[in-house]
Image: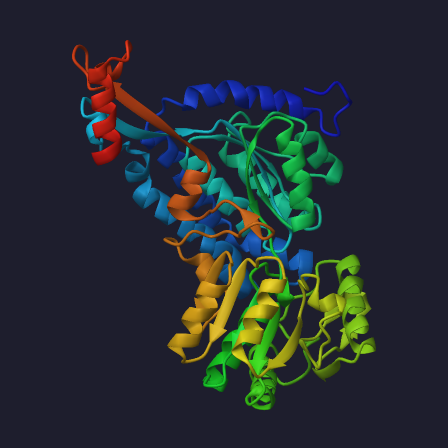
Amino acid sequence: MSDDPSPDPRISRVFDLQKEHARKLRTESPANRIQRLKALKKWIEKNEYLIQKAIYRDFKKPALEVDMSDIYPVLTELKDALHNLKKWMRSTPVDSSVAYFSTTSHIRYEPRGVCLIIAPWNFPFNLTIGPLVSAIAAGNTIMIKPSEMTPNTSEVIDKMVGEIFKEEEVAVFTGDVEVSKELLKLPFDHIFFTGSPAVGKAIMKAAAEHLTSVTLELGGKSPTVVDANVNIGDAAKKIAWGKFMNNGQTCVAPDYVLIHKSVKKSFIEALRDQTEKMFNGKGNDFVQSEDYARIVNERHYKRIQELVQDAVKKGASVAFGNETRAEDNFISPTVLTDVSPDTEIMEEEIFGPVLPVVEYENFDDVIDIINRKPKPLALYYFGRSKKRRKKLISSTSSGGVCINDCVLHFGHPNLPFGGVNNSGIGKSHGKYGFLAFSNEKAVLKQRVGFTTTKMVYPPYTKRVRSILHLLKRYF
């Protein structure tokens, strides 16, 4: 523990309380965990309006979009955990080989202990409470640091946790980056972080001081490949939704499109049409739309503007969009064409409503472009070619893949979600989230008396040598 003054004097005290309480939770029944999960589910269902209002105040996100992308995924996680928790907690028997003939073995799932969840701002409720569901299901105590960039949502999360849990079970610590730094000085048993690769590296360094395990849900440039034999209207509608929902501030949003030159023009026209229909349905302008969120703050608004300006300066064209309004951090859905590979927008994760479209002729070039960049969190393919689809998936590496859709895999309760290398470490959601917050303890039971292993104890006689030879050759 650090002797430095803490930004929140509760931090060290609550950590010690949770450390003590975590020992008691190791032997609790599934019923106790289920009770906590049910209490969480009941509070969310009762206070949906509070969550919607808070997220709207943070970046004008429409209430129905909050339902779809923040509340519904958390309720899905809760229902899945409540339905499967007893099965997840059961020990898993393990088969024994001939060499271990006299033993029985199983894997026991025990809580990691005191866990830290550091959450992002883009889906401030979902990406805070989703991991919390997994941590509770696995039997841990949890300290939560929500994002300071969405203070209204953080206030609701603090209120919710305070009304449901004792602080030795779950506690929230709001504040700026100094609070995160203070928390990271502590020897947690596991850290779950969602955010950028740059901050993920800092989290990993801090965790290394205590050899703390980590789950890092990061991001990166998720490519979208649009093949020549694609259904243009279907692809345009799905990509417009996946890209411009939440104002593009989604870690698995299509970051850039690689499109066959034969369908580029018709795709951009369809994309413009579908974007208007979804996010400007009343036909006024996107500023007046009730279905279109805003950039979270001025800093990110300026960052995205600078990316567009750099791309245009280096030869890119604005196919449509790029209308801005500084007073409420508004950027309209924007598509760029003729984007040079040396632009900042093709190097950095955009995390905003700007979509570069890059044409190709040879499918091998697509694979080369993707493989030259760090491994992405998601990869999307739109087209009918089974051969090219299989080639793309087998020749590239990514956290997840969607075929003829995008973003949907995030919410699937039976799929692991996470990145690879630069886009993340570890998996989450459903059983995979339960495992992320659990220690898979190997348990072996040996019989008393004669055992197979005693046959190869010293002294190393000719008989022992013969037995080992048989084991190596046949078993």
